[in-house]
Amino acid sequence: MKKRILTLLLVLLICFALTVPAFAESEVIHVVDTAELLTTIQDAALESKLKEISSRQGTEVCIVTVTSLEGTIIADYSEYFYDYYMDDVPAVVLFIAMDEREWDIAAYGGAETAFTAAGREYIGGKILDSLSDEDFNDAFTDFAALCDDFLTQAASGEPYGSGNLPKEPMAWYSILIALGIGLVVALIVTGTMKSALKSVAMQRAAEYVRPGSLQLTRSQDFFLYRTVSRRERPKSSTSSGSGAGSSSGNHTSGKF
Image (cartoon, rainbow, N blue to C red; front, side):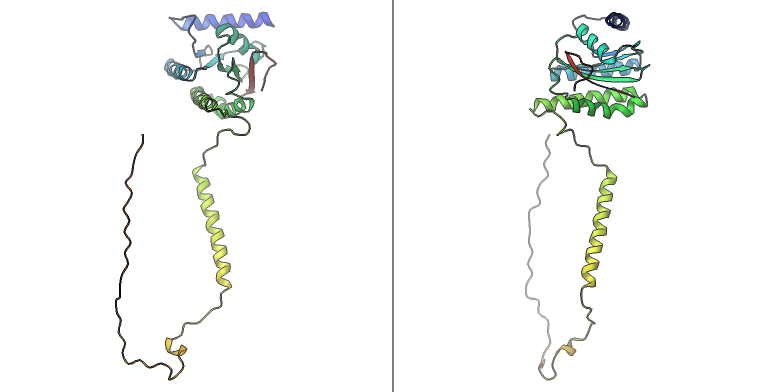
């Protein structure tokens, strides 16, 4: 098994070296797309994005794709790739195997704090639809943005985990549903209150006065005063888990 993995890894690195004219051994390349899932433009844009995130966050964020695992466990393949290519640096790697339609997210070298088992599962779930639809550019771009968010959250001292995963934004139709439910409840309550009131027929004012008890000699309206409250309008201001039993990384894998 180990020999097979090393052979596959060697093929992977040779194929990758052929696609990168100026390959520096000491430089981490963040997109290794040997399965050719991206166009040249998409590959370059994603590489630039991942390189910026990795430099700013101090953790390498990488994406690796292969055509086939040739019977190798995807987590093991990811392990050998990391050991050979990066070795001991903090990193999070998304590994894609096309023939097996498998994905693996692994955290290495200290990145486990930012990418817990619950966090890796969450990220995998967020990119699963795009992977299934073979919209790989969207899936990889979303992966990059999620990794950036997770690393920023970890730097705050409270990394995402099972108890504090990112909140999903409320859909617009949920607001309409909530307003509709509130309106129905309000109508029911006011209708119940109205039905409890005694009906009183409108009568003339004279019918409420005892005969002879009121004598009007003059009728006239006077405008006494008016109160106007003025308030200054405020000025607007603008301001700017472990997976495959490996000793070096934690994995979460799945099918797409």
